[in-house]
Length: 234
Image 1: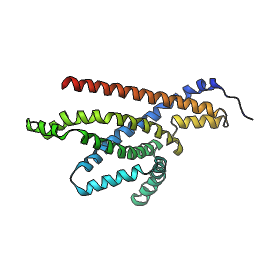
Image 2: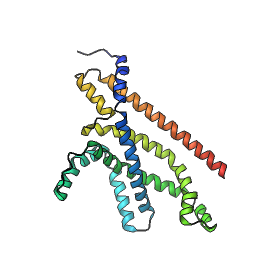
Image 3: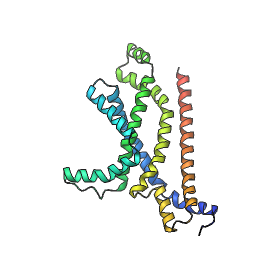
Image 4: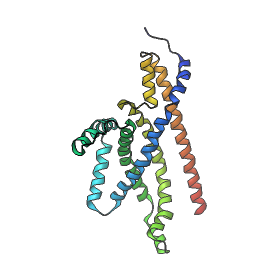
């Protein structure tokens, strides 16, 4: 028997889904923080003059960007505990699922961030750095005051796209049992024996749409603010 579509069920289920939004946000924020740090070191290795580190970072980026995120998630969630137990005699299989989810998406996000940071750094005219050094600034001062502000402005649009993509990719966490926003959606559908699945998924989609629009608007406003500040200082 096919049940009729119930639009009001979307409003009923929204509060129950929003209660698990902090879990999804924790995954995204943890991934962004750790992934950006790791991505910075990967970008540094790519821009450096050590051939081994450069090749290793480029290979890492290529492998990770060619690996579907859900495949990487399964490899980390099922493979890492087995690897650690075999070679280090430690049982980490009972660690919280959020650890494996954040680790997975950190590895994935770092590969993207390394390319983003590298291209943003290269987009800054080398002449500005050389001019800063000629005026008495140290290498670190030139990097902090001249190069990084311009690189950050250049990287911001791509960072926004990467962040929104990560937020949506993070919904795969429910496949390893993490009860986040989408995980709770699946549980609600299961408890109703498959009923009102469309309404439940539409409620989840509304939350993701609202988050994506909010992130894009916030970063667009930040980009305009930084652009105005840069013109004022020019």
